[in-house]
Amino acid sequence: KREGALAFTEAVDLVLPVMAAVTEAHDAGVVHRDLKPANIFLARSRRGAVEPKVLDFGISKVADDEDDSHLTASDAMIGTPCFMAPEQVRGARNASPASDQYALGVILYQCVTGKLPYRGATAFATFERIVRGEYTRPREHVPALPEGLDAVIVRALSPEVSGRFGSVAEMGAALLPFASEAARALWSSTFAPAPPPGVTPTSLPAEVSPSVGTLTGTPGELDAKSPPRASQRPLALGVAATIG
Image (tube, one colour):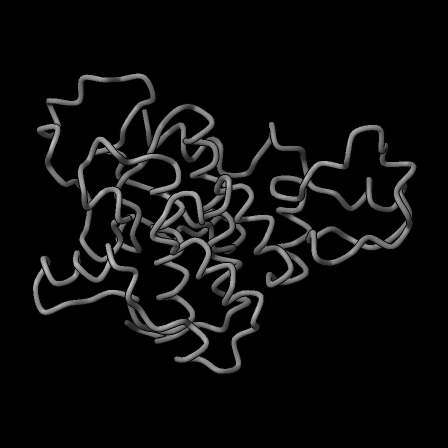
């Protein structure tokens, strides 16, 4: 509301740490079910850096927990209308990590266009559009948006779960090329795809394609520049504290 549509690089830089936090939750078997800008706070570190934090796991779903009757009846809807995936519209028990991915797609759409993909005169009208998948592609609002980034957002907003990325981490890997150089260096070890079986870091060519969001240089230089591995993701503690 304050700044309007964000430059796409800035938007991706803000969303990547959010995706890292959500990936941590998914790895722990937790589906957030209510991801939206109001549940993402921009904290400042002691050095002044902006650090997005994912909050409000109050209606989250824990894997293998069949009894969420304390939250909802089995046919009820949970979430915020404009950010709910079609399967959530049909019922809260249908929510999965793919539903969180869908919400992240809506958030990124809003960041780069300043608009929501779905908004009807009533909640029911909004739900109808969500289920039908009726929305304007991001590039129609912002022609300068890279086609590849437009494609990532559109894939995350697929009405069918099978049409989305295999995971939030996979979506993050697809977004890395559109991040700033600093963000790519920070998040490449979290989101970049693992090398094919039998390929070791020393057998990789010196020049690595920017499509996977890694740094360029010799294997030794890459090791020196790379951030901590996934077990040391920067937002892991933030997520644990939030869930706790």
